[in-house]
Length: 372
Image (cartoon, rainbow, N blue to C red; front, side, top):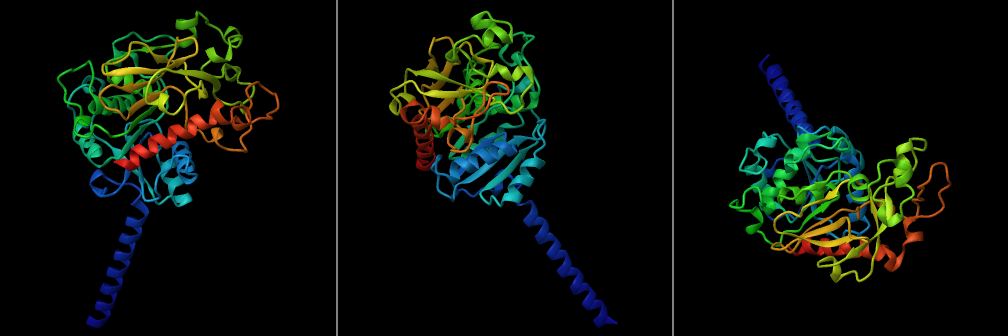
């Protein structure tokens, strides 16, 4: 009887250990800050949706963003965001992306304590201590109340908690006008590369105490309908307004236009006026504390890129340098409803017209991450 009991106990223990190992193996994609080794190379990716993970895996796998394979990409998000990150978890598992991890943050955050020490501050400090680079990605409109303005009827607020979290993280990184005595975390790592893309650039500006133009066509060009917007020159359009008609769901979501580069760091690797991809209706208004304009639209009305005066590797771009369509030979683009697609971005803007600029941009950013 004792032998029988011993056998069952041993079997139970082996099963329990096996289940624990399986559970640990299945969940090791979800990590905490303390799980990150101090000697690891780490790139933080804010708002790590399935699409963002797919995009940055493509950039890294094809050495467009030239990072060593040992670099760990940690997707950081707040559990109060609207996006279902179960999609991201499943995508990482299904594709065997061993260098991609997810780091949820559930500390309390609200609009009242964005620009001060709050429950997220300790997490922010730990993230900065292990990061070799940080990327803030694109997304929806920031609540104007964060930058002390009333909300336009054209502003669409869909995910406020995401903005509270990301604006506060950026404020902790670079400081800003809302508390000039606050000690930015980048003071201890001044060369840390921080990139804001589209919404990420707007987040950077708002965190520093700047404001946003809430709708480009109406506020900067005096245009209030789609038909008149589509009569504008390409260099004045910052999204594809054909998509407003909802009669063709295969349209390219953005518009290509040129930018005028006026300062470093962009000027160091592009002397021309490259064609970039944009999809936004808001842009920088008043420039935030410590920031400078480094690129504008061709007519000078829209700020296309900003950089920090004190921290040399902090940059925000209003356009999108990351989509796969900019680098693929197989993504044929369609801008007009029900018109056939015959050209790729590389067909239209190869070489100095745009492709080289985008590749140089990621080469520059990758070098800054590796140099950490």
